[in-house]
Amino acid sequence: MADLTLNQRHNSYDVHEHLRRQIMTGRLAPGAVVSQAGLARDIGVSRTPVREAMRMLQNEGLLEAEPNNRARVTGFSPGALEATYFARILQESAAFALAIPNMNEASLDKATSAFDAMQRAETRAEFDLWVVAHRDFHRLLAAPAGPEIEARILSLLEQSTRFQYMLNSTREPRWWIQRDDEHARLLAACESGDAAGGAKLMAHHLAQSALMTLEQFAEDGVARGASIVHARDLMMRG
Image 1 (cartoon, rainbow, N blue to C red):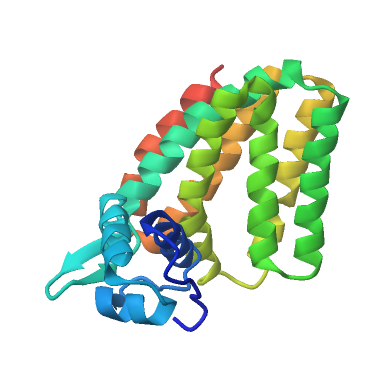
Image 2 (image 1 turned 90 degrees about the horizontal axis):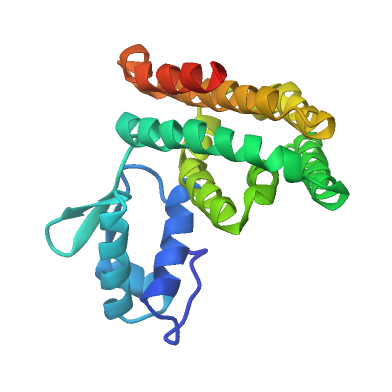
């Protein structure tokens, strides 16, 4: 916990965001036990904001309460992944279809820049930078659909972050480069104005990510993936 550095002026929301980032990126590993007193001491705040931050993280399903003011970082949840990607497939694919006709040169340039940033991170094998660029890429593909939709897609993207880090801990080095062709095809759909084709590409792309993660972590991955396949097929039927 030595890399957690806050101070007494930070409130529970600051502590929550800090701890949430540690959990989402795997720096606080699944199964790790944390205590209010220990966290307060390590990050230099009082126990009150730590207690409230831990309560918020419990409500998000990222911590499980234990006796003596302790909590345990939750492990992989097939149900949580399935719910997140079910929503992403339906909402992000539809948002992409809405966004494509509204894309102009400026919005296309931003998405292209994010894709270029992903490739630079791949070249340097810097997964943290790739995650940020990847999130920006997907957000920017949805942005022309409107700010409210963009905000909703961003929320789902952030929920996906933990699953990406979990997968990265088990896959071969730089596995994320293998998705480049799909990202390039999404960008090409923007350039050609193919809204219907773009929605189908997005549904397939997201379903592949979800099913790959379920296969890696869930004993009943095939059964659990049924709703993912259903959402994908629904969007691909147009």
